[in-house]
Image (cartoon, rainbow, N blue to C red; front, top):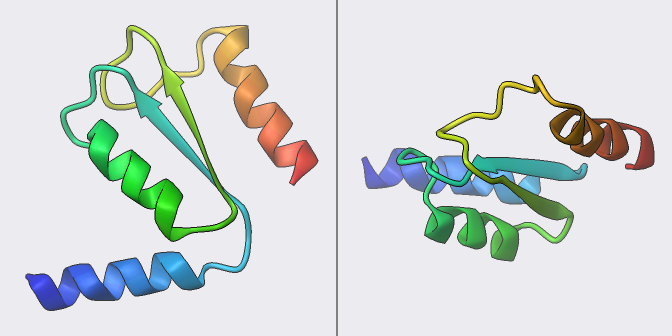
Amino acid sequence: MQVAENLLWQAYELWPGAILILRGEHSSLLTAQTAQTMMQRHPRASLHEVAGVGHWPTFRFMSQLAVAHHFLLET
């Protein structure tokens, strides 16, 4: 398991582009600690936490869409 995890981190760290980390405030899969680690391990990562949401935002609200729209157009 450790070997696979290390390979994933290596691939993540070598990604040449910007990364948008979207995290639901109540996610039990992507913890706040893991999201912070992701921020520390990639210089072009940005984190947006969606309040009141579980694992993945559904993009039903303009405020959620605006985050993705800004990321896609500005990076």
